[in-house]
Image 1 (cartoon, helix red, strand yellow):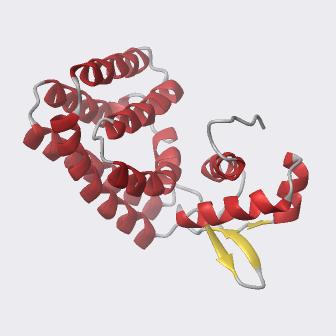
Image 2 (image 1 turned 90 degrees about the vertical axis):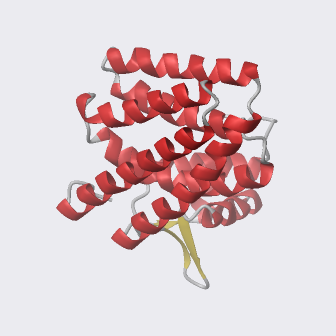
Length: 223
């Protein structure tokens, strides 16, 4: 694991463990042993303990008194609730992005979309998925609302955990609806049409919720 000075050690450890949870290297219900993590990373237990508190806030783990820390389970209710809340916050963030983004911001949003466009037409699912989240996080920054940004970023790890399995189960044709929603969002942001951009992103989030629930109910998603 590499350490970076721009974030605290605890945040770096939280991001590291969060990535392992997303990739299912830690399975739902599995216990994360604080001393083992500290030993593996060559750090003291204190930043690991704080990292686990960060992950609890992100809904990726449960801290159970006198029993330890466990990876959160994924349930149908969890998927539905996370996406419903995320949809409301994304709608607000979209309006603020259209209103507050500078011309340079809009140029960068369109450039990031062009990267996704290349990966989509090159049929590179993995790079497309990574670019998809990078694009969304950049749009969020362009809302210039730190409180809203913090609230959404706390939800993103759990959303990405669900989306990771859902997206990787689909081939590039299966990602066509995701691509269409992103393309429409980029066009609406460029046109400074807040109402249309918000409606598009709400519909996109609702569509992803339906897909995730369908996969979960059919047993296709194995958490």
